[in-house]
Length: 398
Image 1 (cartoon, rainbow, N blue to C red):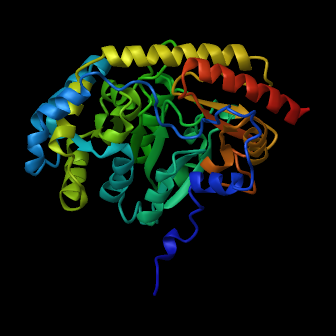
Image 2: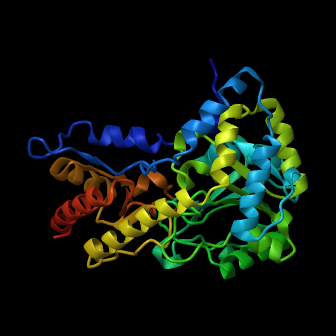
Image 3: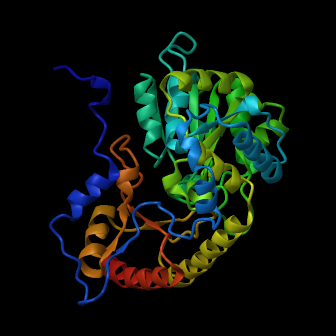
């Protein structure tokens, strides 16, 4: 039996790789001490109080087929949030709901990446390290994935403007994650304006992954669609967001895409054939969540408390960069895999080797000297774990 070759070079996904890495180790903890898992970006703060009630009140609608592009109530709630958050006026025909952002970030490439760009194989730009769906989307449409370093030397954001203009002329899609997973860097207005200008000059789309946009230290991050609209170029951006991080509802699998009328029309057309509509009770809960900010502010305050803990505990660690937003720490180590094994074996702490979130280019993996730590535990658990980490990593460096 033959299988597609285009997926044959995909590395093992990060979490199976981690399980294999740690399989022969037993946490070196005193009896009664519990391991601390800080690998996956799964929020553990309380979900909104109204979720169960809204779900129960709408449970009868499970007997109906859902609206694929989103109910008027949900699209209206998303549009209202975009207006309050970014001062944007986004009509329903510029919106569609998603089963979380991963579905949209993948299927948008299927719907919007052409087979040829200026007579050549198209390229898709991917920050390196990155959320792995970007690369598999590029491979699925048989575009060339171009991995662009996003390292401390580049401000932990990809320097797309520094690429060869000949390459940029065949770029069809550029992925950007801001706030960045895993580094916590924020693309400011100047960066976004430069990228949008580049997209207009070389005629490509920007897929803006903004699912961490509501978790920030001091200032709300700007949005790519917000900046593009101010520049008069809203059709250059398709933005993606969800309730997973904002509202602590990763299991709800509810997100959305917003962009130009033509882009959303093509995405909706594909989704009408291949997408699974969100169940109507999920859409009802989603509409309520997008309409409420109190639970978001309460959750963000907990993350801000954990930023302060991380700064206090790790501030003297060589190379430590406080995250601007999101809920990950991107900690420099001598070797990510070795540090992950040592932290698990000696302190019962699971972290993710940075190399598992990046690709080797030119013999170098930009994640090799890092581990990703998710600030998803309680503040007390976070402080205890980070203090144990400092002890182990200081010994590792020494």
